[in-house]
Length: 198
Image (cartoon, rainbow, N blue to C red):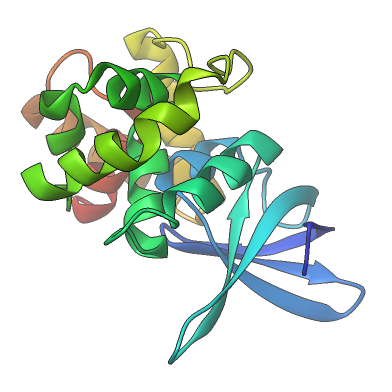
């Protein structure tokens, strides 16, 4: 129904963003990994969207690339995977990493994602493996490469500032978070942990 929204970013939180498109505010739920990529509040943004209608609800989900949106729509077609879990999958692994884990049947990687247990991981592999084998892994996702630690911290700092925290608060939260996380921490995990430490 809605392919994308281009407008002014009015609000950004760990779960959603609000975009003002000619005086109408649209609330879109976004993956955690998108926070670092959003512009500062008050700037123009283009967000690709998926409109999901369920029995008791209707919601818009937003993504910074069309590939993320298309993969999200494939994921919610898997038995037992709803929009919230699909956002979690996209927010914790790059599309390339997610696709490789599914095609390879790597249950260990899939089960490390919050909310994904063994049965869900098995369903993802069984229902998606054949669909994904013929598709080339995406190279253009901003999270397809392993970012150096300094870049991850800088991106997390940017995300926290975009959420409205001042630099001193963001630095303290990131320092506390980095003390308890592994060296090769994922950006989405770092942002989520830092938000708990604010």
